[in-house]
Length: 269
Image 1 (cartoon, rainbow, N blue to C red):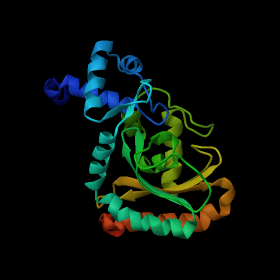
Image 2: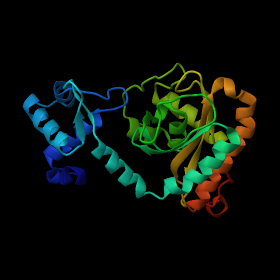
Image 3: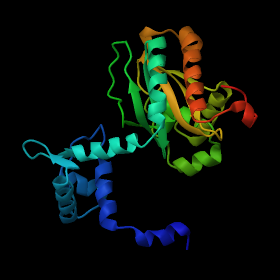
Image 4: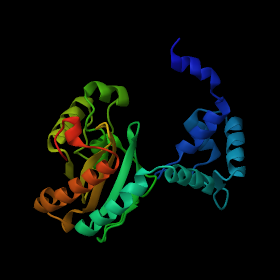
């Protein structure tokens, strides 16, 4: 029996089901009924009703006006901010990202990887009229986003297979890789550059440039990016001044985390 299998005897099934219900909500399905939650989590309706009622009583879910369903409640936000408050990384990165925003005029972000997704920890709004529903706590697929590629840049094909499995990758645009072989080829090119510049890669009409943030061991622990509308910046500027600003900001945050390329025998950022 594996260590994971042995540990499973300590799992509390009801708690796991309750947390799974909370994870069912996202920006595409912000409101769900008890019936939908039962179906999406493979639960009997009576079980789903009890779990939803408990989560509602604790403020993790709130009923929509008219009783048409539930959405995430303020208790979820308090837990999320409690998690963020315990991290040094957002505190280190925010002033650097503010300077990056000021230098480029674009929105600046920081994210970390959670499995096959990325989670936004810091957002600094830019000067353009570009509107976006991506904010702190938002999740995007790692394989289909610019910052996601920065976060998985160092993974080889074996590590990618372990993370993503054998299922085809979901395509967001025609540029999205849909196989691990295609993704591995893109990441190899990303590693060679040390950054990712894209136009309409995740969202049409949006230009972005991302770079990895490394800790004292040289491991990628986060990524930063700037995002703006395509008509606000041309390709030459993205590959020139904007790239230089992003790489400088990523290197500064990495230094705060103890990353010293020379000590590790790697090229400087």
